[in-house]
Image (cartoon, rainbow, N blue to C red; front, side):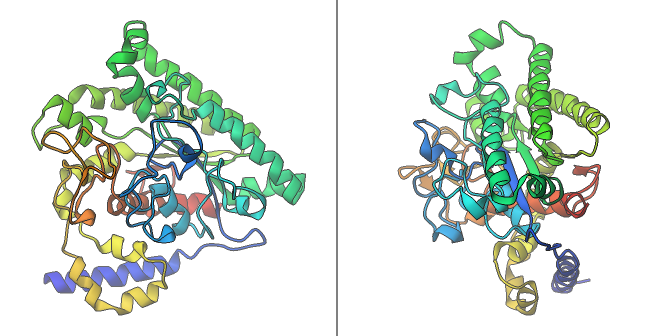
Length: 400
């Protein structure tokens, strides 16, 4: 089969899949996403606190259609993976940042975003940024939202809404290594005091408590992401001076150790919390696959999911197939950044260099994926198989 014929067949399959995956709409409307975590999913909470961890400056957000390309506080060029997952599950609008003035009234029925750049599982994580919102405080903030939902819907309907219509996504843990255990300034109080085993034990202990607290507040459908291959991000590759096809071993070993314990935790919580469904997103293997085989990943999924227009309309426009064979060009060099071989030292901002083809870079900046990468990651988490999301994908979780 020729490349054009294969592309046409792929488009046909994608169109059928998208049509079959139409979301269920009932009295509560589309889905709701309550989002917890760090800068991978922060939608602007850090705009409202005095912190060194900010993304509310150009060219961040340059491809974010909802803002007309203006920065919103998202640490990427467009949508975060949480934004895209919400769209795919039928969410009517993006979950507003908890600290934003518009996170009130009916807007919270779309969900709320509590994530904070620099935040982690442990309260000490990210203190190099002066201020950030860790997971303990994020759960406290959800407790405030929980009271608002009671006032808005009534106690019984609020409970039903949360248990039936809401997905609770948790993307956290990277900063606990990058901006705590692996950071020399902080390691004098952590790495000297704790072995890797003890540190991971501490992370799992606190995360168990945080997830259980959410359960007591009527969260029932969870997706928890494991930690990605930290040693492969441009920042780590730059400071450790590894080759383009290499990753730094220690960060990846720590991530793998944590991920193994996280899988055990998810199994325990599924068995021990009646009515709860916890799904584990295997971000580590998914990102590693993308990094390892980046030239093989074209923009087919990106085309179909990037535009907020009718899917049938997309499928009728064959000229879009010109993008199908345009795979990523690099999984090492940051699109926006400066310093070293991979532009991995200086975070993205008005004075840093910017690549020409943003959809050809796996990484937007020294730490975070590009929107094009986020679209592909979201696709596998929502509709993928057990290799990347288990025990079920998010489409099935949402339909329960």
